[in-house]
Amino acid sequence: MSSSNNEESTSTFSFEKPSSNKQQKKKKAQLVFKKVEALVKIYWYYTTYAKEVISYINYKLTLEDVLF
Image (cartoon, rainbow, N blue to C red; front, top):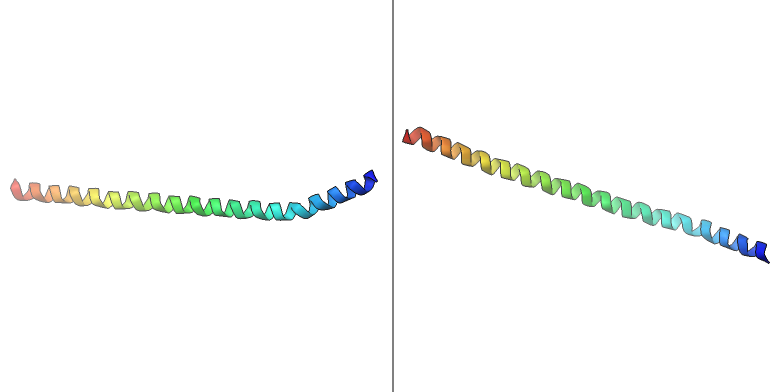
C-alpha cells in the first residue's frame, strides 16, 4: 500500500511540475517586461530632461550673446 502511495505522489508531483514551471516562466516573463518598461521610462525621462537642459543652456547663451 505504501508503494502505491509513493507512485501516486510521484505521478502527482511530476504532473504538477510542468504547470508550476510554466507559471514560473510566465512570472519571469512578466518581470522581464516590467524591467524593460522601467528602463524605457528612465531613458525617456533622462533624454527629455537632457533636451530641456540643453534648450535652457542654449537660451541662456543666446541671451548672453544679445546682451553682451
